[in-house]
Length: 198
Image 1 (spheres, rainbow, N blue to C red):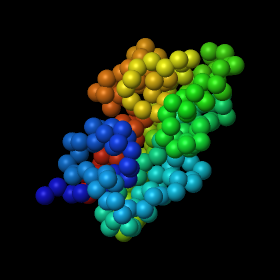
Image 2 (tube, rainbow, N blue to C red):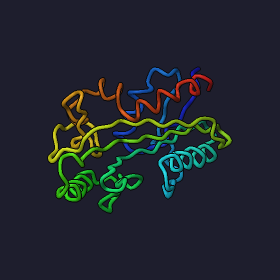
Image 3 (cartoon, rainbow, N blue to C red):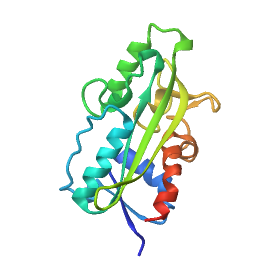
Image 4 (cartoon, rainbow, N blue to C red):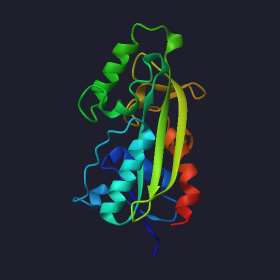
């Protein structure tokens, strides 16, 4: 029987992406929809890693299972690092992608094209059933924020996030390509040795 790994998210698009990346890791992957009593972890960390660790520790201690906590977001240097850890609630409401994208475009609007560089960050933390963090990882993916959305794939800021080498946004790239080059793919690739030790 394969070991169980709980992915600490209720976000269906994030869940689907993580399962797509880690589906061959040899563990049975479940998300928080299997655990309706799991607590809502308050993401009040100052960094992505703090939030990832907090999710992993609190959920593992509650569920008494191995838990993968993850936090990710978009960093725009010209906006002093915003939206950063507030990426999912940049416009106020958690998970309102359209409003978050609209705010980002409005804030970048006055800036010239050479000030639209950005990168996605994903921090991941693996906690054991006692709530001890056993491994952490961070992945980044660099791109440029367009002036209008392109593509219907992905989620978050993906339709605005252009990968120059591919001439496509994360909203246009296939899941196969995105799962190979994304910030989340890079972070989770670093976690694989720890996951093999479950």
